[in-house]
Length: 122
Image (cartoon, rainbow, N blue to C red):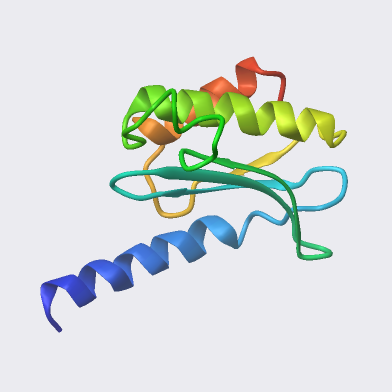
């Protein structure tokens, strides 16, 4: 098995390990994030119905002018704040945080802290 394939297999294993404990419900939907090298995405998902209730990313028209490069902590803080505001508008106060296979530091932690400061309870 080549190195790239091994990295992918390990990442999927970590992701399944985190996801088996999380399930978004109506009362407590799941805040799922995706982090690429240039952007960060966040969405609030109800897994019972399979619907996205709120979302934000560094590609959104209101965020992109503030942060032309979306791969840093400042952009992650903005995305966390915006997704929390949109979730509050949708009537969501409590969520469960799905970090996928990413470690809880850097941009992932910045997004989570900003969402907490904006009023979401984890």
